[in-house]
Amino acid sequence: MKGYLLREQDIVPGEDTFIECLADMNSNGVVFEDNTDTGFFYAIEKDPTSGEMRVLDALHIYNAEDITDKQKRALKIIWSKSWQQCALVIDTYCYALFDFAGHGGYNRNEFPPPNEFWTRHGRKLTSEVISSFFE
Figure 1 (cartoon, rainbow, N blue to C red):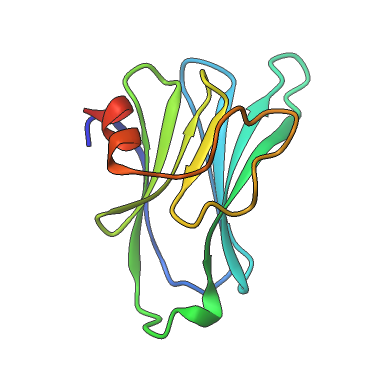
Figure 2: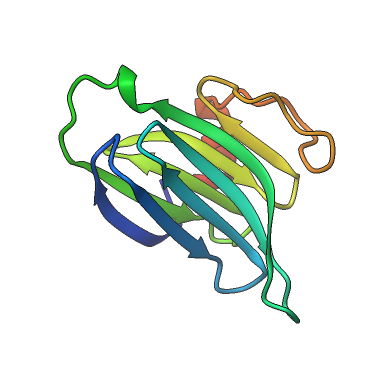
């Protein structure tokens, strides 16, 4: 996966975690959050004047109760070279991807359904979607 690795942090599914990562070249950003019940990945936009952040989309990553092996995992947030796409990788597996230019949020379980104000496409994250932005 080619791009810029901006965050790398060990996490344990089911432990309270909040990781924010803003792109260096624009107002786009992402947040990974584990609230001890679920893991979600959010696309955010930072207002350049006020600094306020707005959530554009949310992608479900996991339910903590479904993960029986609560060992440390390596979470990585990788931005594409254009700074318009951002991927969430846990260990060596891509779980989610946001396409800020195309207003798309993709994940493995396609949950929740696309929202009506930002997301323009279906949710299915495939190898083809990943390679179109990161190869």
